[in-house]
Amino acid sequence: MNKKTNKKTIIEVKNLTAGYKDMLILNNVSFTVQKGEIFIILGGSGCGKSTLLKIMTGLLKPFDGNILINNKDIYNSQGQDKASILKNIGVMFQNGALFGSMNLLENVKLPLITHTSLDSEAINLIAYMKLSLVGLKDSSMLMPDQISGGMRKRAAIARAMALDPEIIFLDEPSAGLDPVTAAQLDKLILNLAENLGITFIMVTHELESIFDTGQRAIMLDKNEKGIIAQGNPHELKNLKNDKRVFTFFNRLAD
Amino acid sequence: MENAKLKLSISENSLETTFFFKGNLDAEGVAKVWVKAKALILKTSYENVIFDLSQVLIIDFAGAALLLHLETLILKQITKESSVKFVNVNLKHEQTLQLCRKNFITSEKIIVHKKQDDFITATGKNTFSFLDELSATISFTGEITIAVFKTIFKPKTLRWKEFFLIFEKTGVDALFIVALISFIVGLVMAFQAAMPMRMFGAEIYVANLIGLSVTRELGPLMTAIVLAGRSSSAFAAEIGTMKINEEVDALLTMGIDPVYFLALPRILAAAIVTPLLVLFADLVGIIGGAIVLVSLGHPISAYYAQVINQVSCMDLTGGLIKAFVFGILIASTGCFKGLRTQTGPSGVGMATTQAVVNSIIIIALADAVFSIIFYIFNI
Image: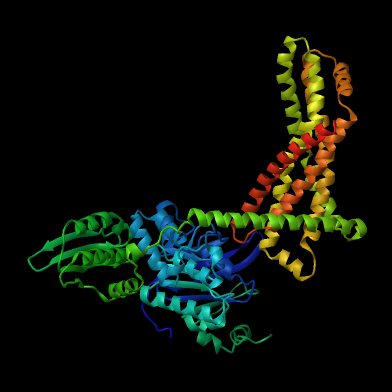
C-alpha cells in the first residue's frame, strides 16, 4: 500500500519535547510527513496524540524542538510567513467546533471572506461546492445544533477545506459515529486525498478507520513519552516483537 | 511559479472565440479577474467558445468555480447548437475540474438566506411559543409550591449545604455592591433634594425624605435590581449549563425532581437573604443622606431624630415584605430560565439574558402591585 515514492516532505517534526506546565508528555519526538499521504497518529488514551496535534497546528508551544511546515518553522514565523502557513492548513476539531451562531454555509464562507478578496458570488459558489463535496449541499441553511454528529464533522471538514489547504488535520474524525457514517467519512478522506492531493494528519484510535485510510502511522506511548512504532498500519498489525503495538492493533486485553 | 499572476486574454476568429488563461487559477488570481471576466462574457454573445488552459499552473476550487461559472454564463447566451470546450487541460487539473463539476451548483440555485416566515405564520408561531411559556410558568409555580410543602413536612430532605452556599454567594458576596449602590443613591438623592429645599428653609426635611424613600422604595428596589443582574443570571447560567450537559436529564433518570434538587435551595436562600440585604441597604442609604446633611452644617442628632420620627415600623416592614417577594421572584425567574435553556451554544447566553430582563420587568410590576396594596391598606 505504501509505495516508495520520491514524495516531498511537507511536515517535519524535529526533536519535539512538549507538555503542560510541569507535566512532560512528549520527549524528543521526530518524524516526517510526505505530501499527499494520509498519516495517522495513534496510541492509547493520554499518550499525547491530541497534544501533538495541537502543537502541529500552532495552538500549543512546545518546550523544545521544531515543527516545519513546507520548511517554515510554525513557531518561529511571524507576520506574512505565519499567515501563509496557517492559510495552508485546515483543522477539523473533535466535535466539529462549528460556530453555533452561523449556519453551515456561513461557517464554510467565513475563512473565504476573511482571507480572500473574492467576489461574494464566487464565495457562495465555492462554499456550496465544498458542502456538496461532503454531501451537505441540501443542509446549507441548517444551524450546527440542528444536525447530527456525523454531519457536523463533515461540515467541519468542508470548513477546513475552504481555502484549499495542502494539509488537513483531523482530530478523532470517526469517534462517536455509527459504522456507516464512519465509513462514509473515511471514503470522503480517501477521495479528497486521491483527487486533490491533500495531506491528511489524522489522530484516531478507531482501528477500522486506521486500516481503511492510513498509509503511514506512528504509535505513541504514554510511558515512553514518544514513538514506539511507525510504518504502514497493516504491517504494524503483524509486528509481534512489541507487545504494546501487538495488543493495540489486535484489540487484546493486557 | 507560486506567485504567477492570473492573466486572461481573448482571441477571436470567424469560427470560435478562445479564452487564454495564464498563471495560477487560485483564490488570489480569481479575485482579481472575476468581475472583469464576467463583464467580458456578458458584453458579447459568444457561440463557439474554447477555454485554453495550457498555461495554467494551478487550479483550485476558486479557479474551477470561475471556469464553471463562465461556462454557465456562456451556455445561457448561446442559442444555436454549440458548446464550451476546455482544451490543453493536464491530468491533475482535469481531476480537480471533474470533482468540482460534480459538485457545482449554478448561482441561481444557491440559497443564501433562509426563507423568512410570513406575518401570519410568525404570529402563529409566537402565539404558540407564548402559550407554551405560560403553561411552563404555571407548571413551574406548581412544582415549586409542592417542593416548599415537601420541605416544610420533611425539612431534612432539603440540600442544606447547597442552601448555605447559595446564601453566602447571593448574600454575603453581594454586600459590597449593594452597599455601594445604596450609599451613592442616598448621597445623590439627599444632595439633589437639599438644594431646592434650602430655598424654603426646609433643608432638614431631606432626612424625612431619605428615611421614607429608602426604607419603603429605593432600598428594596435597588437591591432587587442588583440581585437580578448578579444572582438571577448566575442561577440561569449554572442550571442552563447543567441542562445542556444532560445533568438535568441524569437527575430525572435517577428519579430526582430537578425543581426540588436545583431550584428550591436557590429560591429559599434568595427569599431569606434579600430582606437581610435590604436592611443593610436601608442603613447604608440613610448614612449616605446623613453625610450630605452633616456636610451642610446640620448636626447628626437632628438628622437621626428626623429619620426616627418619620420612619415607622410599618414602613420598614413593608420594605422587607417587598424584599422577601422580590427575592422569590428573582430566584424563580433565574431557575426557570435555566431549566428552560435550549440546546446549542447560544442557549445558555439567551437564558441568562432572559433571566435578567424578565427579573427586572417582574420586579417593576411587583413593585407597582405593592404600591397599590399598600395604598389600599394604608400602610
